[in-house]
Amino acid sequence: MSEWTLFEVFIRSKHGLNHKHVGSVHAADAEMAIENARDLYTRRNEGVSIWVVPSASITATASDEKEPLFDPSEDKVYRHASFYELPDEVGHM
Amino acid sequence: MTKYDELTEFLLRLGDSSLIHAQRLCEWTGRAPALEEEMGMMNVGLDLVGQARNWYEYAAERINDGTDADALAFRRDERAFRNLLLVEQPNGDFAVTMTKQFFFDAWQFHLLTLLKDAKDERIAAIAAKSLKEVTYHLRRSSQWVERLGDGTEESHQRMEKAIDVLWRFTFELVEKSDTELALSESGSIPALTELPEQWRATVNEVFAKATLTVPDAPSTFYLSARTGMHSEHLGILLAEMQFLQRAYPDASW
Image (tube, rainbow over all chains, first blue to last red; front, side, top):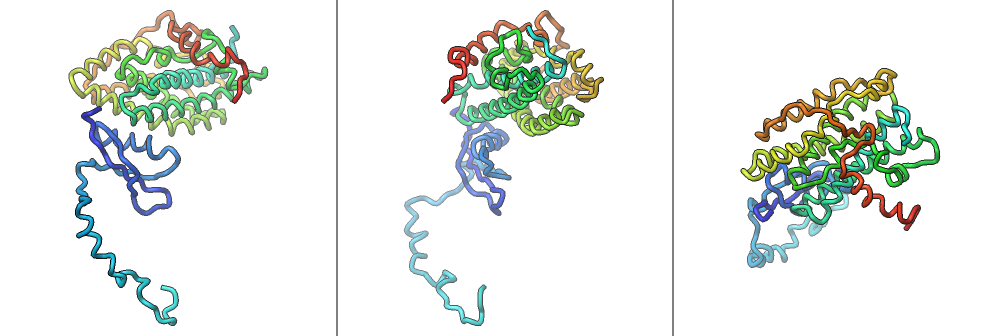
């Protein structure tokens, strides 16, 4: 058990277009990870497709990088579409 | 001991095998090697309890003396059970549990594949629904057999030992039966003549990948689920499974 690999699980729901991260499972290999993910995360009809990825293969941002990475976007409201006023004749976009 | 008509006997064989196997799986609750595996086994168990209920409900309608699915599960004695000897065997280690699961899954898979075309529409419908579940069960247990057989030296040895323990009971999966022959001749179910060969082919294929040896054909012996002659393990299993209904009949929440 302690030798098993940790996999991250992504599920695509019936009406969803993309796979979403739902949690993780331990498994001895990728096939077992798929089956464990099926048994843990699709019991209530949650999905139509499963991806599993070894957790170790994911490169993530570190929490101490939060300020330099994400704070600079805080005051750039003009990057949101709602910042711009549309002329009436454009109607709904 | 009541002997029912052939179709009812056949339904009980299917229902009892699913229920007793599910009860064995329950014994792993809280003891499985990993949380994920425990969920996996309990899911299979729940599928099988659902299948047993479907077969029992049909059987109860045919028996038609006021019995129902619960009574068939909890109020019958050992001699009245028609489950395969294989599924009442103790779980042993994980290798025994998975080998048992695999033998049973392969049998169910081929049997249900044939039964989904039964002329008896009720049987065809239950078989078609169950087959979806069993297809997954077989995939899961086949992969475990491969993983353990072709795993470490110890896992391989444990698998060889598990096969040695269980193989003698597989004669029931490949034997010809008068009940089933009569049922197929009367047209209620398709001929099951190919079932033994299909079961063997699946075992051969998976064992080859798992680097495991397939033993010689098992021979029939004095025990037989068809006549209610079970191994000593079923009585103990039933004592636990039926305790509540026996001690407090019709207890409810």
